[in-house]
Amino acid sequence: MKQTRLPLVLSAALIASVAVVGCKKKEEAPAPAPAASAPAPAPAAPAAATASVASVDLGSAVGADFKVTAPATTFKPKDTIYAAVSTATSDPAATVPGKLTATWHYDKAGTQVKANEETKEVNFSGTGTTDFFLKMPNGFPVGKYKVEISLDGAVVQTKEFEVK
Image 1 (cartoon, rainbow, N blue to C red):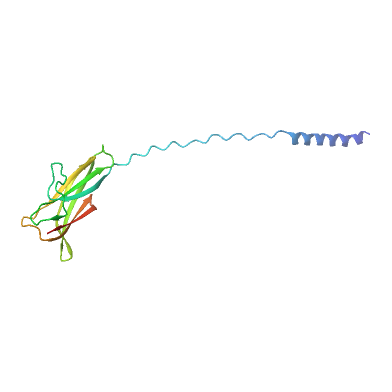
Image 2 (cartoon, rainbow, N blue to C red; image 1 turned 90 degrees about the horizontal axis):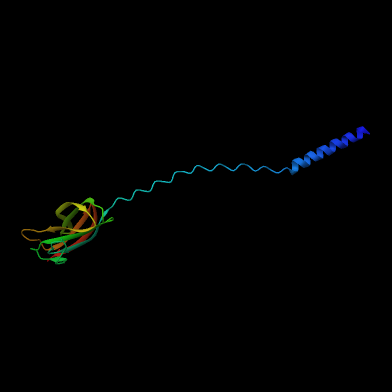
């Protein structure tokens, strides 16, 4: 009888061990270590202030503030022609160095001919006005003209006018 009990005991032990292993609580995987966070990006440097041309006014006279006091687009041959260039900076508290250029042209038989060019070094700060002028000692020939205003070498505004 001992022989018949041994297989029963072994079978019971095997079933019990399977049951224990099957009922064993699963161990949870350890929580992953917190990822090393990347350092916060440095704040972006503020964009450098820029200057821009807001408007160009033509006239035959300017005031002490360099603004046109007698606006016109038609002039007489003996007039002095002024271009008042209004500028502004993106940051009113900043000073932005730059160059303003006025290039004056006239139409000669359908061809644009350069009459004069003047460049001024300017320290732009907030809003301001810079003036340019063109005068011909013997008077301007009757015809069509234009002035191109450039900021740091790039044409930003063109104004056409006429001498009658």
